[in-house]
Image (cartoon, rainbow, N blue to C red; front, side, top):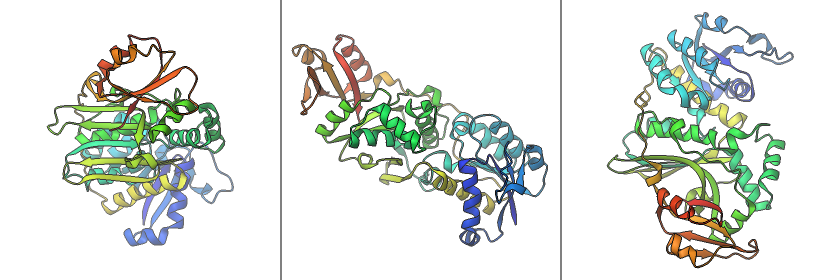
Amino acid sequence: MINIAILGFGTVGSGVAELIDRNIETIRRTVPSDIYVKYILDLRDFPGSRYQDRVVHDFDIILNDPDIRIICETMGGKEPARTFTEKALQRGISVCTSNKELVAAYGPALLRTARQNGCSYLFEASVGGGIPIIRPMNTSLTPEYITDIAGILNGTTNYIMTRMEHDGVSFEDALRQAQINGYAERNPEADVEGHDACRKIAILSSLMCGRTVRYEDIPCEGISRVTTDDFLYARELGMAIKLLGLSRRAEDGSTFYVRTAPFMVPASHPLHSVEDVFNAVFVHGNMVDNLMFYGRGAGKAPTASAVVSDILEEARTLGRNIPVNWSDEVMTLSDPAQESFRRFVRMKDADMSEIPAIFGQVRYVSPEGRPEGETAFITEMMTESQFDSAISRTSSVVSTMRLLG
């Protein structure tokens, strides 16, 4: 029997315990020695729960039990999760986690500690919920020179924008629906301002280049300024609006660009049809070409499934380290001002003669029902620097958005 402990018995942690119990026969086909949850660390007691006799409040009880071989960290946040994880890895106890905040901030250091102590640190559930993407990046795609990753990495924002698009409701009303349905937190800032997706694209980008892409270095925009009128224009263009984490590098590796922001996505792109709480990660490799990983990006059961996949991987490799291609060396990102996109622009009471003079050749967009006095268009490819210079020459701009592709 392989004894494990779960740190944090909230949505994901309780899902891990329930999945192990429910799918034990399937698990035994992979790990013949039973996986048994011996301890659950939480501040609460859970009276009446089938797991109440396994709850402890002192991490040292877990740390000092020689029977514990794997710890599952589903606490969230940086502390005390970081301290507990470091102590466990230093004892040679493998750790797996769903904690993207911790992985994005301290992943390389924790991987190094695991390597030094002959154990493993895995984090499949930190990106994309139940979607298998971390392990493919670290195994199946290692022969590839990956040049592009574009991902819908946050189910809350994707749900909000799906409701805005299909139901015509405002951002505020769609957010309230998301909170009522349990898709958004009471304080939704990390989701709607793009911070959650930013951490996730930082993790994927780090695995893409084998170095550390710091999420603090990534330009990050959320969806709080997206309006129903933006969707009116997007529909006319045959596009959808998605919050994307985007990572690109040149074939020669000379530039590496990462950004999180709302994009207009054309119908020809696979990410266009990803709706509601679903996530998807689009990957381009120089030999394999295009791949897309799609599924439920959050939720109790899907995220627990990803966590348990790491538990089983660590159980099969007890006593040795599972290597992860992610070093401490910080990746220098290219100047975002030099990256080029086509841009969608809305202007109010604009002088029509100034548009080509400022923005060059444009394609006008005129859907029925557009706000009175508005002019909208798509620019040609422009660097961020050129575009910023252009909009500084007019006070008529209402909103802008990048186009994917």
